Length: 112
Image (cartoon, rainbow, N blue to C red; front, top):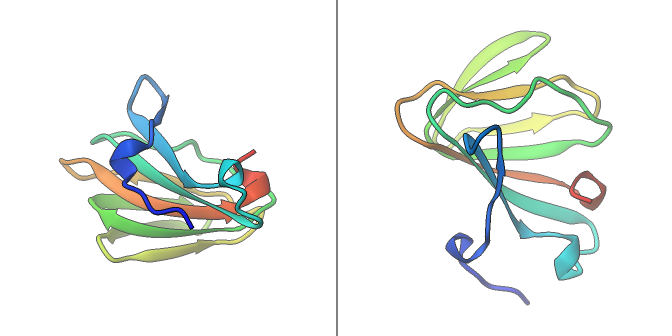
C-alpha cells in the first residue's frame, strides 16, 4: 500500500511553469492499470487542445475551469467530475483568479 501527500511529489512543469503535473500513483508504483495525476493550473493557464486514444476521468478539486470540446465549453468548479472518452478532443482552461487543481486518472499507457 502507498499512502502519501501530494506535497511530497515533485511536479513536472509545463508551459513556463503555468501548468504543473504530479503523478501521485502510477507505473513507478507498480500500479497495474491506472495512473492518478494532480494537475495545477495558474490563472489563465490551460492544457493544450488535444485528443488521445485513452479515456480519462477528472475531478475538479478547486478553482474555476472551462472545459472545451468539439461540442463547446462548460464551466466547472469544485466538486465537478468529467469523463473524457477516448479520441475526444478536450482542453482545460483556468478562468478563475486563483490556482485550479484537478485529479486526472488515465490508464498507465497514458502516463508512460
